[in-house]
Length: 402
Image 1 (tube, rainbow, N blue to C red):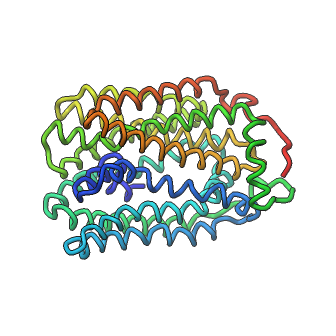
Image 2: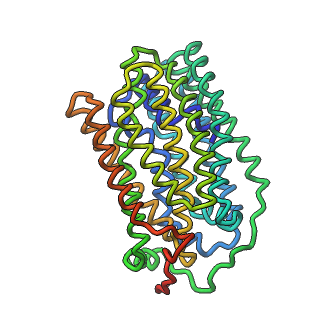
Image 3: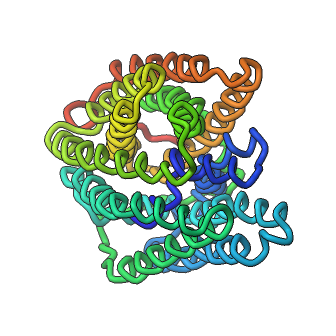
């Protein structure tokens, strides 16, 4: 996660695509391409993952494929872009998507590994510590981004950032290999269906669990923040009349806010549960939309990006905790894959809506900010109506046909 801050989706990626001459639709889509790639395969591999008892070897295999695209994209930016800029831009755009697809094949397996390895009352602090380490690296990443893009402008600088990110991802792969997969909790002893049979159970899974339906709809509406996300750094740089390299300061502010969010979110998530942390993320997103809209000075924008960091941290900690706990153990991989499938549709829809609103309003940041805030408020209302799974019977024991 620390390595990924060198190409942060909300601050660096949109500015990079704009700098490389990419079209508006690509600038709005590139921040979500990795998450979309991760989410696409899940629904089609969940039945297979549910048959596998030891999941770590599968994750190690796809982990190699997840990291290779950043090497190719970095080299293309450094050596190919001067003579073939369109080809280099295509490599840059495909990089997070292909990486995400490789990761998405075993995304459900990774979630199962977390559920088997980390006890429920420690999962929030797991995400918090994980994100805090990433944010600490990200603080330095902001200075590195500023220095690299000042010294090596345009394609070469962005290529170097890709290579730096790859080095961190390679280190994470080595450390991940040291994880010991446990044999708990045991899987229910029942036959796992084929792909077609598993897909046929999805409507029953949704219809039979009110809490899951509410969470699913709230998760879908929370994608509304993607409407505004690609335009925040571009808007701030335009108002301040700064160069691309100044985005490094926005990144550092985001990481500082992220550490605060990690401390608060990890504590509350362990003690109370994921629901309160998700609500905090929605509140921070609303404050962010209004703050970015009203900001006019450097310090105001830095404060807004700090709130962005808190919102992202709360969102990761809250959704990863609440999502795992609200899904029944029986067919948990399939429940999680349904969440991912909904995320694909809503993320792409939000990105398209953001691009459309930006174009129709001739680049009005107010419109995209207000549209995002409306969707986030609706999402918060649904989360408010959820019962915290850890403190009640939010996940009923439903015996559905396999």
